[in-house]
Image (cartoon, rainbow over all chains, first blue to last red):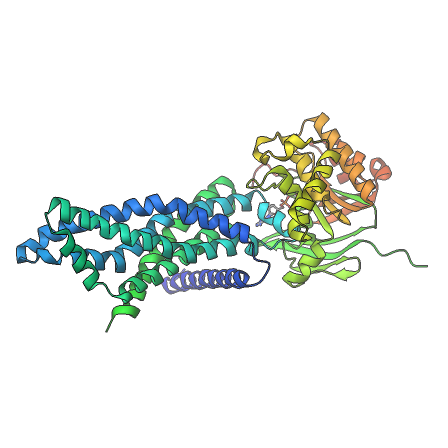
Amino acid sequence: MSFLAQIGSVLLLFLAASGRLTLFALTGLAHCFRPPIYLRLIGRQMVDMGYYSLPVVGLTTLFSGMVLALQTYTGFARFNAESAIANVVVLSITRELGPVLAGLMVAGRIGASMAAELGTMRVTEQIDALSTLSTNPFKYLVAPRLIAGVTMLPLLVLVGDVIGVFGGYLVSVYKLGFNAGIYIHRTLDILETQDVVSGLVKAAVFGFIISLMGCYHGYNSRGGAQGVGVATTNAVVSAAILILIFNYIITELFFAK
Amino acid sequence: MSPPAPKIRIRGLRKAFGPKLVLDGIDLDVPDGQSLVVIGGSGTGKSVLIKCVLGIHTPDSGSIEIDGEEVTGLSAAERERVNRKFGMLFQGGALFDSLPVWENVAFGLIEGKGMRREAAKPRALVKLAQVGLTTEVAELSPSELSGGMQKRVALARAIATEPEIIFFDEPTTGLDPIMADVINGLIRKCVRELGATALSITHDMASVRKIADHVAMLYGGRIIWSGPVARLDESGNAHVDQFIHGRAEGPIQMQVRN
Ligand SMILES: Nc1ncnc2c1ncn2[C@@H]1O[C@H](COP(=O)(O)OP(=O)(O)O)[C@@H](O)[C@H]1O
Ligand SMILES: [Mg+2]
C-alpha cells in the first residue's frame, strides 16, 4: 500500500473515533438533563469521586506546596528574591498544580475504576440487561458519572488549593524561618479571583474528561478480561493526555493577553 | 378465519459483524403463548438472533414484528416501551453485582415500571420464593451465590415484571444435570403461570425436550428445520439428526482449524 493511502486510512480511523466519542459525550450530556434523574446514583458517584479522593488529592497538593516553597527558596535566593515564595506558591497551586495534579490523580483513581466497572458490566452483559429492563444505560451509568465528575473535581481542587498553600506555609515558616503573618498577608495580597476561578474551571473540565474517558472506554470494551484491562489503560492514558492539552487551552483562554 | 398473528414474526433477518455474516435471512414465527426453542451449535448466532429481537443489536436488514408492530428502527423511547413486554434471562446471568439480590429482581419494577422500593421488595421476595430461594438470599450480593442460585435469581428477575414474552439464552449451560433439570422445570412452570410466550436458545437436548412446544434449528445463518417438538426425532433432516444425537460425523463439520 502506498504511503499516502496509509496516512489517509489512519486519518479516517482517527476521525471516525473522534466522531464516536463526540456522539457518546453528547448523548451522555443530554441524559444529564432529561428525567428521570437518578439522585441515588449521582450521590454514590459523588461520594466515590469527591470524598474518597480527598486523601489522595490532599497529600499530593500538600507535598507539592511544600516542595514548591523549598525549590523557590533555593532558586530565588540567587537573586535575593526569597520573599516571592508566597506569591509563587499560591499562584502555581491555584492556577496550575492544584487542578492538574488533582486531575491526574483522580484520573488514575476514578477513571480507571469507572472503565473497569463499566467494562466488566459490558462483557458480562449487564449493560445489555439494563436495556432489557427498560433502563437506558446512558442515563443509569454515564450521566451520574459525568455529573459527579463536573461537580466534585472543583470541590476537590478547592480543598487541594488550601492544603497546597498550607504546605508552602509550613515549609516557609517552620523550616525557612519566615514570619507567619507576613507570609499569609503576601499570599492573600497577590491572589486574585481569576486565579482561583480559572483553576476551578479547569477542574470542572478535567472532571468531565475523566468521567467521559472512563465511561467511553468501559462502555465500548469487548473481549473479556483482557478487553477490560485495555479499556482501563486507555481510559487513564487518554484522560491524562487530554487533561494536559485542555490545561494549556484553558490557560491560554484565561491568561494570554 | 385467518390464523392468529404470531407474537413474534421474523422475516429475512440478516446481521453481519464486519465481513462475518452471522444471520443470513432468518424466517421465524413464535405463536402467542407457545414456547419455541432454537437449537444450534456454539457460535451459530443464536444469541445474536435474540439480541436483534431485543434491540441490543441492530439488524442489517429484515423485519421483526412484535404483536404485529415493526420494531426494527424504533427510536430509543419507543424501544423502551416495547421492551417492557420482554423479560430476558442472559447466558451468564448478567446480574448487577453492585446491587443485592432482591434489588436485582426488583430492578424492572423500580426502574422500568416506576414502583416504589418499599412496594417492590415484597414482590421481589415472592418471585424469589417462586424459584425456590429464601429471604436470607435476598440481602446477599450476587457474587456470593453459586452458579445454580445465580441462574435462579436471573430467572426471578426475568419474570418479575410479568412480561408477555420471555427470552432464555442457554438457561442450563454450566449447570450440573440435576440443577439443569430444576431450572428447566422452573422455566416451564413460570412460563405456564404467566401464560407468556417464550423464545429460548440452547444446545442442551434435555432442556429442549422439557421446555419446547416447537423447535427450530439454526445452521449456517438460516433456520434449516422447524416443527413441533414431538416431530423432532423424525425430522428427516440429517443436520437435525446429527445435532440431537450429538454425533461428530455428519453433514455438520466442526471447524477445528481455520
Ligand atoms: N458484538 C459482536 N461483535 C462481533 N462479533 C460478534 C458479536 N457478537 C457475536 N459475534 C459473533 O457472532 C457469532 C455468533 O455469536 P453468538 O450468537 O454469541 O453464538 P451462539 O450461537 O453460541 O450464541 C460468533 O462468531 C461471534 O464471534
Ligand atoms: Mg450464545
